[in-house]
Image (cartoon, rainbow, N blue to C red; front, side):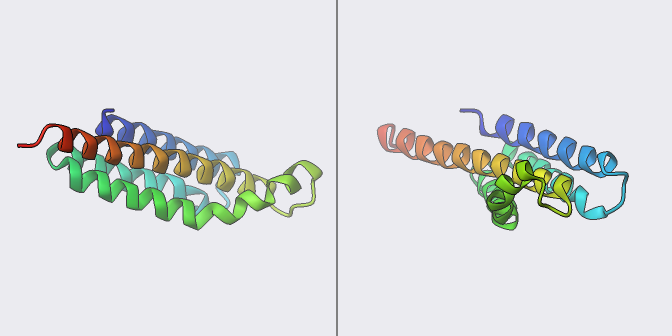
Amino acid sequence: MNMPRIIFTFAAIFILLGVGAYFGTGARSWTALIPAILGVLLAGAGAISLKHLKHGGHAAATLGLLGFLGTAKSLTKVPALFSGGLERPEAVAVQAVFAALCLVFLVLCVKSFIDARKARTSNPG
């Protein structure tokens, strides 16, 4: 698993999500850019991972965890999206997508960490 590639891919997805949400909602609130901000930070972690894979990977995983924890509550509002009972359905939709993407990213990070540890123990030295 090529962790820097995964980091950069999710960074690009987060940037596109944030910019799309910002302009898709009429540029009413800068908070729609939060996924893009995290995407830029994630790209920085990806750059670090090119030279220091372990440190960059852990920084990226931490950002993914923060992104998930900050938006996980929105997942509980997803059923209300379909019933139309929300004041700002666009915000909830973007937050829920962002939370799900952060969770997928975290799972891939953990898998990468496990694979790296297995490779280290099977090839000591």
